[in-house]
Amino acid sequence: MEVAVFAIFALLSVGFAIVVVAHPHPVKSTMSMVVVLFCMAVLFALLGAPFVAAVQVLVYTGAILVLFLFVLMLLNIGRERASAGGQPAQRWVALVGAAFFAGFLGMLLWRTHGPDTLDALTPDYLSIHRLSWELFTTWLLPFELVGLLLLVAVVAAYAMARAPQPGEMTPAAQPGIVTAAAAESAEPGGETT
Image 1 (cartoon, rainbow, N blue to C red):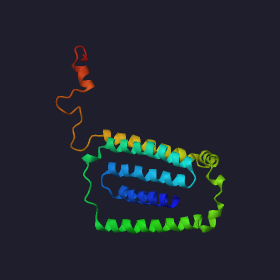
Image 2 (cartoon, rainbow, N blue to C red):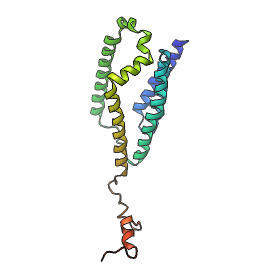
Image 3 (cartoon, rainbow, N blue to C red):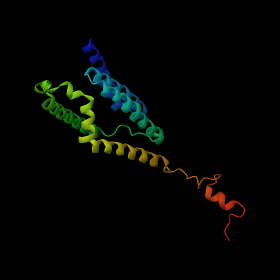
């Protein structure tokens, strides 16, 4: 039964991961990422790590992807026209780079988690106590830097969304729109002598 559940959610995860990368619409791509992260949570639960599965759903699916959707909708991606897909040379370079990266990652995983290292997985290896100890001692600085990086990304997205686009008029330059400074000078007694 576990093998069937693993196969179903692994195939769903891989299929929707391809949709995340291949779909041209960013909001639909982000919604596909929700499915991928939920499938990963099921796989973590099958591995005997229910805490990591719950964190996967609560933090990544519930918070980080909502933040991504907020930023995407704030940027109003629909007003920008996507290019026709790039040049063919760029696609071939990207495919070769992706194949090289996948091969390197597979080799690295085989060396670090190959058949010889399966005996090292003890119940203590997946415990919440060990995970929290490692997170808040060894990996505290990278954990905080990721949070800072997400904050900087949201602030930058907000600044980009508020900046006037080329060809758009600022509110002060549009006819019929009165800014706060113009309203103060137009009030009786607001003029300086």
